[in-house]
Image (cartoon, rainbow, N blue to C red; front, side, top):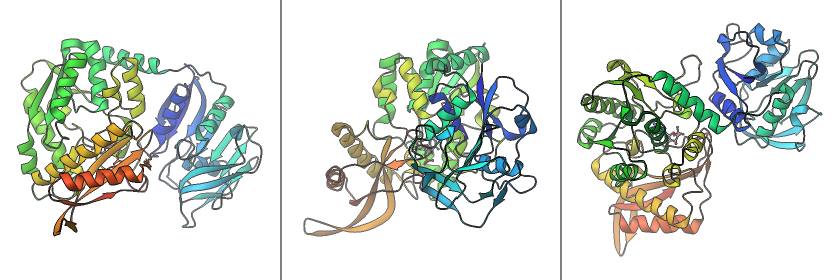
Length: 507
Ligand code: XMP
């Protein structure tokens, strides 16, 4: 099948490029820059961004096979710089960085900007820049900080963009990628059903014998995965849910009963909150907390798994943002932002093979698969919930008192969001506990009590996110309810930071 090859230079956004191509119904594959081979099916190349500087010897380069193929190339950020560098242009790093929104002014006609306005808001994230173009190249767009913000060589069909068309904060980014696809002359015939079919084929091919153990969190990813696997494997699928005491109010019970009712799935629920709380005592560092929760999870899960026979596989609903933010792809050099909780380490210890069919998908693609197999909107529409749960939403030390206050406050926030219709509009909303005290006045009394924060973000891929524009009245109403109803809380704050620079979770 004809494809676009995404060449990975270690950007946080590489898979986002692949995902945009799937959105355009284009089949694509992602390959590390140092593993390129001859492939007649490639109709064009997209070179990703990356954390390195392109004009330093020894840093990632463009394989000669790519040039020899004479296919169109689109370089993005690092990809744009390394293409210019290898073709004879000049790159500098003058210490000036450009992060965030910039105004792009289109200077010259380009098939890349076909049917687009002359001024476009784009998303930049770079330190180096191209200051002189190779022969045969021309500037097609500029921004304040980057006079060469986009270039082309029409004879070779090579294009470069300093900004990131793959992130949603770049207006018309998808249209630019689509315009490049037109240059590649590749047909749009890759769909959600194809993705599901590919996943099912891989699972049937891999899991020929034995049982599959699934760590179910009740979140969208593991639930959709459980359903896909349940349909294919029936009783050969064993689901275990660990209640680590860091779940939301009534969550374990709700998940187990609703999955039994909706898809007749039996879940083995393990109550383990005492162990987790004991191990988290006195710990405040976020990464240490994550590691303790992850390791304890593995211990508890392993103990439970011993009760079942003939388990050969461990299935996980890992999706791409989990992989990239933990820099789980060892072949690239994406930097670690936070280590995501999963059951990593278990497969070796238990000598199990790892099954992660959603590893390259994004949350909304998993949701689309959920819809394709007719899961209810109530399950599919759930906001994501991190593996370490409230353990990373109680900022600082995790205690049962703090967890209790947070659980109650979070329940009020989510209930209000649902009854007002805002829940389905927001991508992820939650309350968090801040380990500080603030003075308040209740009746005629001074109180000195705890602070609860609220966060709600809008995003389609969880790689970048904007704060939800919740009406002031609504937020104030939630705040009043929390302070009135949750004992020991004197103040509520609302987080107004987008991602980047902040992450969605606080820890
Ligand atoms: P951040 O905070 O990295 O979150 O911007 C991006 C998305 O990932 C979720 N998240 C996690 N999910 N294990 C998970 O399964 C984790 O350790 C974890 N940490 C963050 C987060 O809730 C958001 O949806």
